[in-house]
Structure formats: structure tokens, C-alpha cells
Image (cartoon, rainbow, N blue to C red; front, side, top):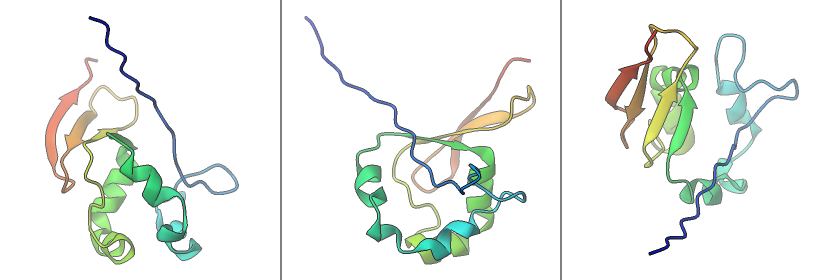
Length: 112
């Protein structure tokens, strides 16, 4: 029996003109004054996403700024998809998977 499964990987990000996602202090607050996210293609895009991959700096910033994220998105963790968190190439860094509320539900450390 032949199965035709279609899968794609997409990269969707907001970056500054100099190519950065966050400021030097890993802040994402520069994104919020740019307008209402509902006036962009993002809401349609995110509904078609099955899983997310996120850097640890973004994840940690969202956790530290839950009130700001809630004010802008309506939720401290605005994703329903499973999310894989990755970080710097460091044998002591544990990667993790977070649930629909942004809570770590699994973790692993790369062999080093």
C-alpha cells in the first residue's frame, strides 16, 4: 500500500532590517508597536502549522514577559501546537518540548 503524505517545513519570522529577530538583550518588544497581528497573514499561517520550533531565547523571553504577551495576543502562551525549544550548541543545554500552555513536558540533552 502506497501512502502519499505531504509535509512541508516553513520558516516564518519577523526580523529587523538588519536581520535580527530580537534585540541585543533578547527582547521581542520591538515587534508590538508595529501594528495589530490580526492585520497580517500570521493568523492564517499559524492555523496551518502542525508543530513549532523556537529558540530558547524567544521561549524564555515569552515566559518572563507573560503579561506583555497576554496583552498583545490574549494568552501568555498563544500556541496550541506542540513546540520544540532549542538553544545554543552546548552539550549542557537541555532541549525541551512544551505543551499548549507553554509548560515543559519533556526534555533531553544532546550527548556531549
